[in-house]
Image (cartoon, rainbow, N blue to C red; front, side, top):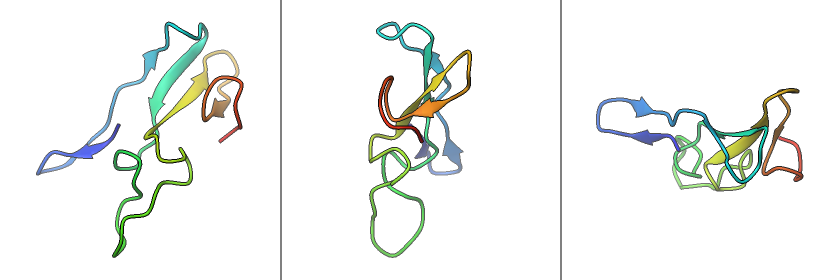
Length: 71
């Protein structure tokens, strides 16, 4: 999950999910489930606050989780 290290935004590298073959866990780009900026913290609507989404290796389709709703 993306986070601020005091100098810049650091993003998580994509990694294979052993539980779901053919799917990679990728960084949503939000700040650990919270949208960047704004005056109050708001949960990211893209990843539903988890900070990560899944991407199917063959098709490139992105979903909240394998078999779940598309992003």
